[in-house]
Image (tube, rainbow, N blue to C red):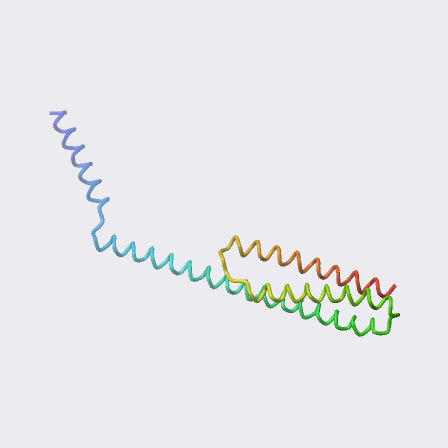
Length: 146
């Protein structure tokens, strides 16, 4: 008797587990649709965040490029008053810096999204180049004042 009672209890427990663990097809479809919609929402949010980050970075970088161009233009006017031998050196260095500034502008305009890792690498490299250019411009203009 104990054995049959134990067998019935186990069978009941097993049947209860199966019944509560099963979902209807409609519930499974609904859950799957909800999961897909959540994933699409997250993807759209990430895409919008990425676009906003790029636009913000691009705007700030363009402002720096314009500022560099202004400094270089002002410096070009100042060196016009220098002695001819000094002016030639300054004009050569100035041309190199203007070319670097122009290259950075072109890089920024031509950048195409190629994934988050590539974006991070591009941003890091671009910022380093921008910083180096700013330092070179500063060194040139500060050196001309002395």
